Image (tube, rainbow, N blue to C red; front, side, top):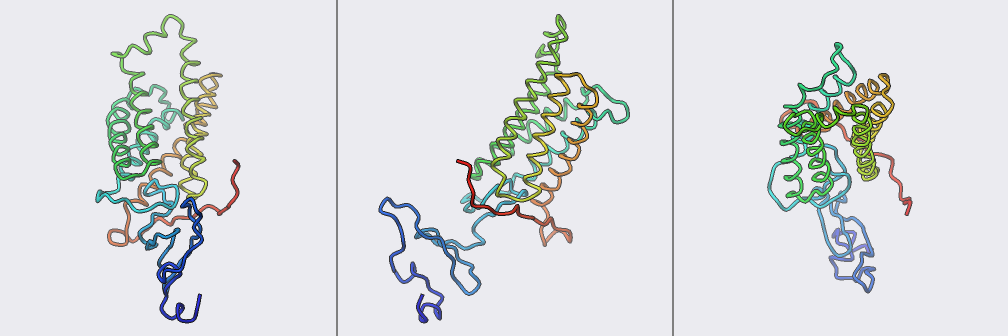
Length: 268
C-alpha cells in the first residue's frame, strides 16, 4: 500500500485496485483497514467489525457471522433459561437430592417452559438467520416435550412397558443415547467459539451419555453422576443466558467471553 493510501486510510478495494478474486468468484482476500482496523473486507465486500457477530454463548452464535437483517430481540437467553431451569430440576431428581427419585413433578415444566417456550425461542432464532441456535433450541425443546410425553398417561408410553418392565430401561437408554450423539454433533460446531459455549454442549453430551449408561446398566451411581453433571450444565446454560441479557446499560457485572484457542487445522 502506498504512502498516499496510508494517509487516507483507503485500501485496494476503495481505490478500485483489483484484488485476488478467482475467476469463479470465490474470495481471494480478507483484510482490514481504518485508523483502528474497524473495517473488515471479505473479498469485495466491506463490513464494520461491529456489524459482525462473534462467537458468543449469549447469542448461541458459534462463529463469526453477519448481523441479522431482522430487527428482533435476542431469543437465545430465553431459550437458554428455559433449558437451564428444566435441566436443573430434573438433574436434582437424577442426583437423588433429598431422596427424590420420581421425576413426574418436572412434567409441567418440561411441557411448557423447557418444551414450548424453548421451541418458540428456537423458531425465533431461525427467523434471525441463526441456523445453529435454531437447531439447538428447537431440538432440545422437542426433547423436553417428548420427555414429558413419556410420563403423561394419555400417551400410554409407560403403560406399554408394564408387560415387560425390563425393556423400559433399555428403551430409555437408546432414547438418551440418541440425544448424546446429536449433542456431540453440535459440540463439533462450537470448537471455534468460547469456553463456556463449548462446555455447555460438551458436558451436556456427557450428561446424556451417563444417563444412557445408567439406564442400560441400572447402576445407581452412574445415573447419579449424570444428575450431578446435569446441574453443572444448567448453571453453564444460565451463565450463557446471563451473558446475552447483561449489558453495560443494565448491569455492573458482565459475562466475559473467553475464546477457545484458534486453530486453522481441519480434519476433513
